[in-house]
Length: 111
Length: 117
Image 1 (cartoon, rainbow over the protein chains, first blue to last red):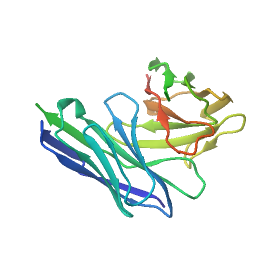
Image 2 (cartoon, one colour):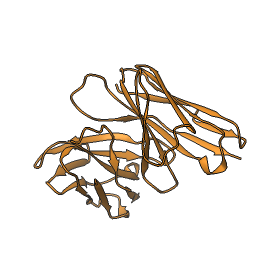
Image 3 (spheres, helix red, strand yellow):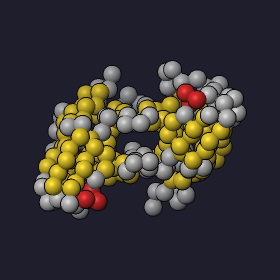
Image 4 (cartoon, one colour):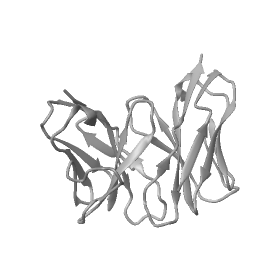
């Protein structure tokens, strides 16, 4: 069975203090790993898809990396508007189309 | 691009009544749409996969007669919560995959907050 574990559960950073969020996963065969951002009371907003170990993608202050067992979302010099819950999800190769989500990391960036 | 809308954004209904939630892909076609449920401070749980022109596939433990899904076109899927009870109160979110694209991203709607009194 697919498993996704995100850590830490919550993270408080000072504005400008860089850090990383972790997503550990177990799947029978990875089709893709996805990062989303979710603001309170809203649907998830797509950030990145990673398909193979060694792949990296960047968007503004965010950079996602992937290994065979985990993914990191690096946040460089965060701003208060980066405060949100960051969700990691995996899709396996068994044929099902659905995403399996972790419980998320709730990030708060303090001015 | 890849915008998904949901309507209504919030609904309050009385116990025993039915509520319909619409999910639309605004700028792309979606053969497959998904319905999720999210409880406070928890992650998204898949309820069912909706395929255009065919029956939905429900996850284990989800009552198909209670949560009716219809995907009549490539841009619209609906979820009807029948005979709603207070325990059905939750945040319902739909997502859609682009038809014909190699990538597997799902694009999510803004969610519908259902409160059953």
